[in-house]
Image 1 (spheres, rainbow, N blue to C red):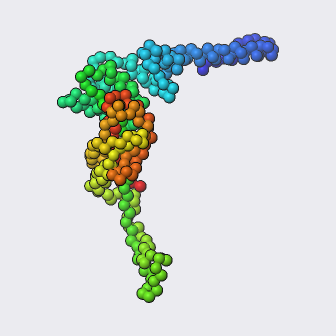
Image 2: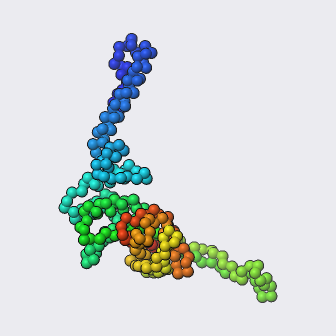
Image 3: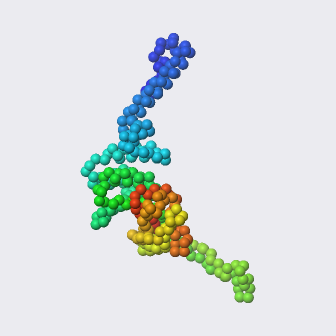
Length: 293
């Protein structure tokens, strides 16, 4: 910040006068505000640092209608994304834009060439970016390719093994058995042979556990009432997943997602706010099984 104390530029005999002291304060404050305004003008020349007013002007030019819950950083990112749309539009170009929106490695892109379908999968925590992805693809996507969003809900399971030796104590002797007061045999742990922090579980057990978790899911329930039983299950290594399509004629926005077993018990429950922007959206739940505590 530049120097705004101008009293030092006055002759010494003026500095002792109270009127000039207050005048210097007022002028110094005005100069400080002027310096800040000039600095903000310089920042407004760049999308990454422009203020809310300049952002709103660009949104009006690009015909973007922001919502109250969107923060300034996201609005800047969206403006930058729209301004950088220049052909040719390729799959590499799309990945560069998704890197900008979701971050490198935080999404998956799959192209089903025989069926002319493009799938983009990302965590449901980045749901507000799906709207921007839909707007992006409406500009760069060929008309004969269908885009299906795949919001993903991630969960993790940890397995731990502990080995210990102990002593069995019989609480009763023949002829003196008070039924129900104590267990017949008590186990007293004496020595820990293997701690949970020491790795011992083989990948086969992790894969089998992931397969069991995915297979135990019988149905998905949306918003507490919409039941979907047409599930697709898959297991890759120690990750099991359950996916299912959701049509916009079923629900316009997903507020809650539950996974149920065959008896109707709720296995997982997740509160989300996911507006369905496409005709068909594929939701995917992934379960990663790892060894740990």
